[in-house]
Length: 353
Image (cartoon, rainbow, N blue to C red):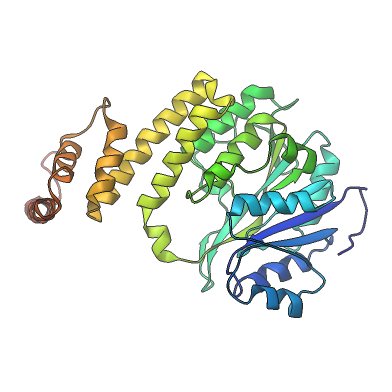
């Protein structure tokens, strides 16, 4: 698809997909509807077994289609980038949407601030049923979250001449504590993507796998963060959102990897932030695993808390998790009853409160 060349820059979108026949059309229509058309759009099919090939041939013959054997989303993204000859790469998950003025806004930001190596956008969340989960992810961040960045014309900027490496590290600390960025809508210079060696395939199969790449992007160059919510992120599976154990385990694995392999993680402030985040997520994950009576995960996750202060309730949970499964189930039932009884007999307001 040819775009109007107002800046001389070429922009190409990469959409990795796997068995998304039902949702992919809406995504592609949102990319087609840009007020500033993409110079290239490429769907990278990571071995779909549904009717995605026929869909692309019949309904989207004007959009590039690269089919490959089943590997992982990281290799699909990397293959898409390698196949495009453009200046800027735009990433979009195959069930998400981009606002009609998305690319025009990205191009304007790239022209206004040539030092930028990557641009993230704010996003909203919605369900397949049309319910809005949140209207602006950036607005959910804690107060002071963006204080380390330079603000200009609706965009925060870190790194380079905008606070240098220190501002990038500070934002990484904030991201580790409270993630706000999503791969959909991310724009990155092709040469910068290649200098980072793209997405790491060692993250394959891990929840929140893209967070590893995000931390490398933010820590390594001048990056902008547009405050306008130009991407819509779909929450398809309510059960997956509720299952916090898998989510926490993925985030813990990513953080542990970053702690061991990222250059920026050698900075004391980021080391401390990562360590604190691992402990916090481990605590939450243990509670979730205990609720689900997944005793193996309880044991694995509680190991991360060894040597750290724990409450009496946490200690009791750890002891129960180490019991044989049938006995652990009985103990869990007993604890639940005792907890219910305590709640029922506790006064609504303590004297003097």
